[in-house]
Amino acid sequence: MRRDRDFEHAYAVIMAGGSGTRFWPLSRLRRPKQLLNLLGERTLLAETVARVLPVIPAERIYVFTNDLLRAQVVRCLPQLPKNQIVAEPAARNTAPTIGLAAHEILRRDPEGLMVVLPSDHVIRKPGAFRRMLRAACRWAVVDGRSVILGLEPTRPDTGYGYVRKGLRVARVVGQPIYQVENFTEKPPLATARRYLASRRYLWNGGMFIWQASTLLRNLARTKREMARGLERIAQAGGVRATRTLRRIFPRLEKISIDYAVMEKAPDVFVVAADIGWSDVGSWAVVYDLQAKDSEGNVRPRASLCLNARGNIIVSPRKFVVAVDVRDLVIVETADALLVAARERSQDVGKAVQELERRGLVELL
Image 1: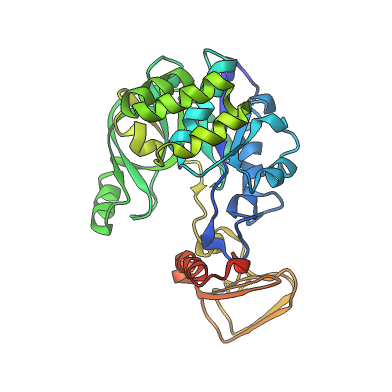
Image 2: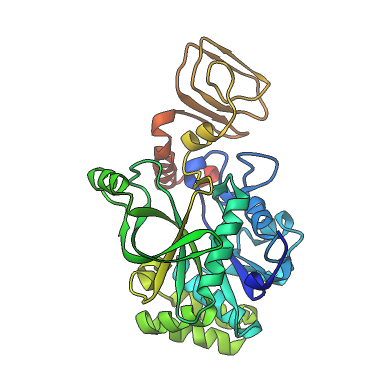
């Protein structure tokens, strides 16, 4: 896909500061989910950058991470300018980060269009994703509009936020665009089932497009104190004002962009499409996405399964033999071994919390 006028002022802002505790023991504080190659040769972060490079060049891609991870992110993404890999001095959720990025983009380009993306998702249909992105950028170029990339739900999931589609206002490059009527964060199962049956709701995967000036204006309206703090950082030099950034940023309110801005903003729209999306939220999801042997196991070549079915085995160092076991997650690293029921693998994060409570910091 050639770079053209739809993306002439587009800047990607990739959020890469999370910890991904549900992939312990493979993921650690110093090697979180986005820096793992769970589904191929490249890390999830490198895959995210590769998806947007055909339409947004490296010189307009920013990655926001933290001090602990910045050096690894720089090594992971040698194609990006180092000064566009920004280490936040404290974890304050997505609203302060996106506001900081908006100021940086506005400094470079008064017409700058922000494309905000998570770093740890899988998109199996990158071409469809870029078509969706093209439609969103073309619609969001109008001042004041905010656009969400909405994902067609495939099940009544209680772990995602939902957006309710209103009137269809346009069709852009074949993609329908709807007004957003409301947001619902992680509904109970009965409600999620109703949403799925109605076909009026989409998953909110945390992908947003708007002009940098639109975001900052909405942020000033809904979170004045945060907006003032970000303005002081911008006046001092923005992401390069290390001393000011370290002094002010940790004091900003810890809140997501959804709660801080999107649920209160005017003129919010959603583009709906099937892009083969997954947030890769647990070992069970990795199992679902991987090729399996004749007994339904996901396993390395250096393993043996006898009357064992439905297991996922991750063991780069040891030969694993599984006998008469079903639906397990078995993950081995140099210092730890995880054995969990596959259907409960989302609870691995609770185990990490317990390790932290017990002071076993060497395992985190």
